[in-house]
Image (cartoon, rainbow, N blue to C red; front, side):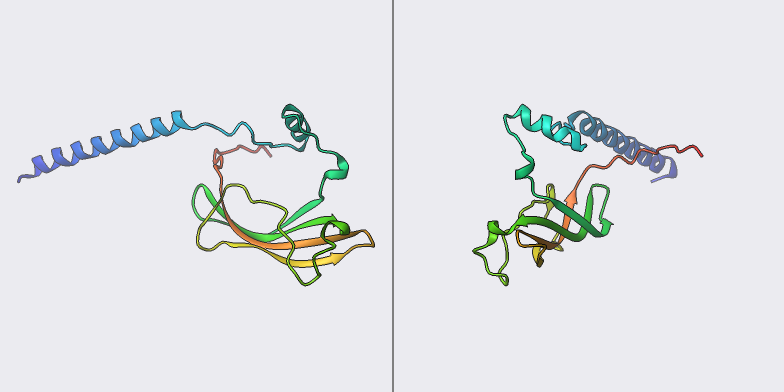
Length: 157
């Protein structure tokens, strides 16, 4: 075949693939449904629970903290995180479980995906604070799926 025919085949194929890419962008852009139940601020929690007929009393809340050791972005929508999550409990809650045994995990990692590298939460420590309270900490490794906004933000000096 001559060179002119190859150019026509190459151009036609390129236009076809550009059309397919545009079609995929259009379908993805119009089919995405954001999660309207996502709570982005602490102040949104109480109204969210009240709307569902639930309440959260200060006495029912479990103080929880997180220490992130590492973040690794696997791709545009998945991030691998490692770290510790601790929770402060009243000692009476787990009084029947001996100090050497694992306590049931009191948290979930939403949008976690099985990447093959995940390590489920493992109890790392259990320490008494005083006569009534103890802190239980778990080490975790997890890959979370999350849609990130990579839009460039301009910062003025």
